[in-house]
Length: 81
Image (cartoon, rainbow, N blue to C red; front, top):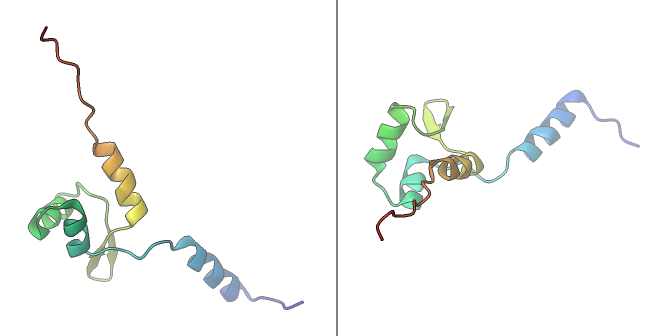
């Protein structure tokens, strides 16, 4: 049996934690059907979850999907008869 070092175990664990590739601002804007500037504004106001990778802003697709579900507005029944 092969002995693994801590760094090998950490690398394996880190790679399993990373799911889909991170999205950039253009990818999120295209996916949501809004302008790049709108996403930049949401980021600057901290109204959308994002990651900073160095100087780059990136978005985790699964976190973004959860955030979108939280933004959902359910329709109300009309009281008009």
